[in-house]
Image (tube, rainbow, N blue to C red; front, side):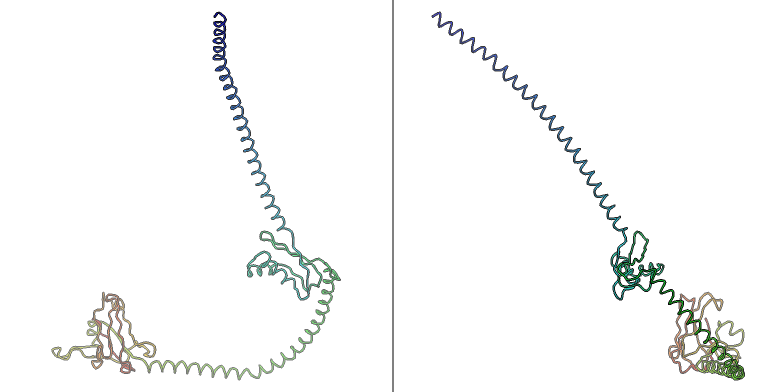
Length: 332
């Protein structure tokens, strides 16, 4: 019994020990795991920071690479391009094709550039033509390339040819001058003989011109209608028009002469007589009538009041009735 109690007592002690030990172990294990988790979190954050730094460095390097690429492309654009001269090529054509096709310069602008550019002629097969265009600056030069002679030698040959041509031309000019002097003497003699004829011709031309002007003036007058216009009051005051007995026959023409009809229009050019109220010192034109009476309104002519009475237009409908006619325009 005693032994059993001892065994039970030991068992309880063991159970109590484990009851105390197990939570401690669990607590210790939890603390250790938490510490490891914090350490891992710190390591992850540190790695993320390094990754971000590396990404920034990569982006910076890429920007530097792109900048270097742009600088390299810019430098490549500044390097002159060469063209091997073929049969039939000219310096101008090569330069023009380079500007328009290689550099995309509009045709007219390329022509303007080449006008101010010294170009060589002739050029030989095998020469190398170098072209350069950067910004707004164009340049070109020529090297010997595979040609038999250099550009300098070619220029000397051309210069000698030009000198020979110059001497030849000077001799021809001297001969032409001599012939010109002989011809000048003959011309002077002929001009001296023809002076009187020229004067006569000029005089005849002047007469013809005067006759043409007179003929045109006469023709215009023959195709014109003659008129004078004024207010009814002024015309009565001047005796140009007058009333009839008791006004039964209306108004008739008074004392007028051909000198009164200073105004005219050429019916071939217009059939409208324009009147302005200001010219007659009246505020507005209300009505316009025509004398002599046999000329009928709305049959032979029509009156249009315009600009609220500031102007009037007399449109001659029956043109044949007005040739060489003398009419009075009465403004009311």
